[in-house]
Length: 327
Image (cartoon, rainbow, N blue to C red; front, side):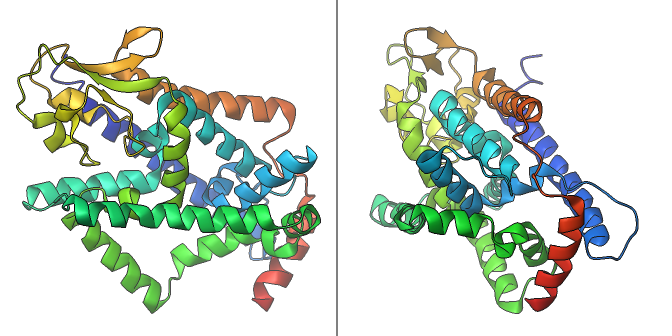
């Protein structure tokens, strides 16, 4: 059983399940758009989970909620998912990145391919640190833009037709990317194969935010220096290139809580999760914990009306054709 249920396999399985769910949500959203655009008479409710792909809209919703106490009624599920992800970071580090994010799943596959090809390198620190700063610069830009807007401007944007159809525009990007977009995507794919976990480590502003929040997490990887044999297998396996064997406690914001280092360690009990004030915890803690948090927020949102948009279906059928055709 120990050889079957490993951190690497468990993580890959959870990532695959959530990625397949995202594909299912995409098909449901396409069916909704067919109805909204008048291409089908079969009404399919808009799946709230699609709003998880609108992080900027969710950030605007968070800003409005903080400033006015008003919950976003256009993309309510987006704000719910965003808060759930922040809660995950507080409790379980960047577990969202390690287990749930579909882009993280693709990054994991790229890294595995890179390892098989003898690539998946970790750049020297003089290159690694400046590249890491890119995602924090992107995060700072978005946070500045959103929180420098007046409260009235935020509300007007949230309730604008442009924001209402933002999910359809995002879908259009994936279904009909431009030549430039395809070129950029191809470059990122190669980048992710050659450099270990490249997108998450260097370019994702979302991951940068979760990394900052994870500083407050009580959960972290702890190394027992007395039993450690210094083999370096933990560092070699770490997707983020963290020098695990050189730390007693891994609290860096680059840790995604994947427990890959724990699975690679040949000494039982040398590496493991620790919870401040609670001692050691099983390596399954983060994976199970982030899923539980997400499901908990979903149930709460359904029970309290914070999931489905407060927009009549008839309004969708007016706004989507009008605005999308104009774009």
